[in-house]
Image (tube, rainbow, N blue to C red; front, side, top):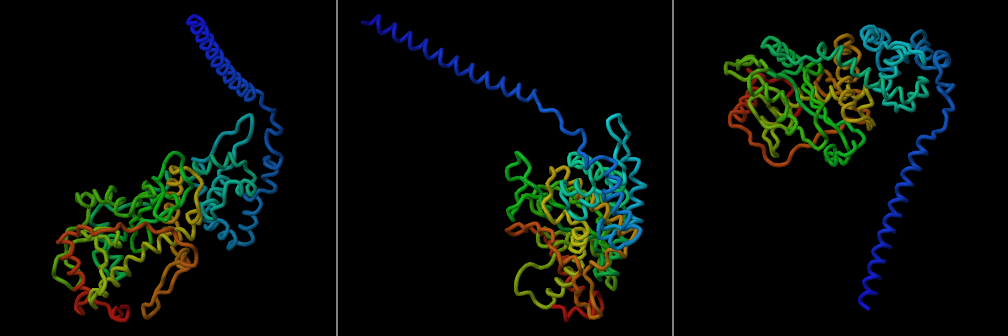
Length: 433
């Protein structure tokens, strides 16, 4: 009896091994069949689809047909289509053509640099998706995916060092402070600092790194702006979950300011005053109060002099909001959800900032109609940029900051200065609180 049981157990083991072997063979056969199916691809129906051929692109594409018509017949429509003038487009093309020119091959002719540039600027200006650009410019979507990041990188390489220049000397910083005092009546200001979210599609395998407090995925544009709405310094490396304070505390800007390497002038008396005052940036309540960073009072039940201080600081800080508004109004890709990977999105943001600063240098009147302005009584007239969806705010961290005693004393000095008729008071400030 025992021998029969042992024989039965042995037969059972042999049967199980045979079953496992059969399952493994079946899996291997399925993998082999998949590989064979991949190898037996269907022959291409087209080498190039007929409507994408170079001859039809020249006849019906937007670059050779529509843009030439708009250039000759309606310059306003040309500007509305690309958000830049034809003269500005020609300047860009002249500078970028050597970087964008490719050699022809035996298989096909290379695309014109002007076509690549026009397609890229249209994507930045209107936020058109790649399929839409493909039908408009008669270029394959896969090709557009490749050359738009290349064109953006070419713009950054060509212009970034020329148009995004953070001052490093006392003379350059004093010139910025003089502009702030002349335009916004606040002395010793080195720039206004703020951050904005730019939405993007969720990157793969990133978890919640790019997920922000408004429940979408984004990267953050942190910027320092001068009195003329020009970006002096930008940081696009932050992920969406980070706050303004987190980004600034980890930035090279803070490091160079606190170490003194950035070149701020030494403390000097303000206009009509005899007490030394450090030079400083201005921000909102997201930043900690420091001698190099002034912000409004955040508590409730402010007295009259504190409300005047808040008005004066906020009036000067408004330039950074205007700068973001102009940037998004001109390059509306920043208002939607970008579909590219984070590195390409950061490159697109830097490209938009380069073009914004370049337009401000070459054609300063182009964006004046989009700014917030003041009437003769210094009441705010909202600019055109406020009529469209704004870029998303970066959240303010909760909890008290460890503001330094020196910074609090400096803010009190500024409060007294703004309320002193013989110091920095302006005639209309009483009406604005």
